[in-house]
Image (tube, rainbow, N blue to C red; front, side):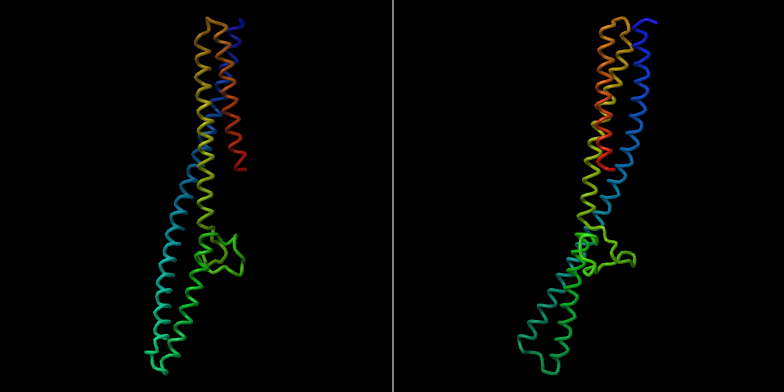
Length: 201
């Protein structure tokens, strides 16, 4: 077997391996993109949830201010002031609850003391992931996908080099050069892909 044929055979095997790696990377990338979509949806959902709590909090704060102004003005009869004070106390308790719920929705149950848990999720306490966490997850997966895209690019370039190396069988030096380029770029692509995967594990 001539040296050119040996290079072609070796190049063909390497191309098959690289194509296999390319397919595996595509599957991983698709899975990560699904995670990005999920995290983005959750982030939007938690943002809306947080904003809804903020609106309720503002309404209660306005109600508190109104009740306090009534008490301070002295326009309420003494017989009704006790009822007004009770309403003010309930309003202050509601304000405190909304503030605690906002913190938990923003930070997540795992990042606040258990005694501060105030918001349930499907009837269970301590299950709030947190707006910040969903944003972090989304950003993390987006960075991983970016690295995988670079990995895929190198693998695709590697395949091109390999195919060119197979075509120019009449020029041994060029064939060897493109085969080496295929191996080099393929190795870089695989290394970047493995590095990206290691960040998740």
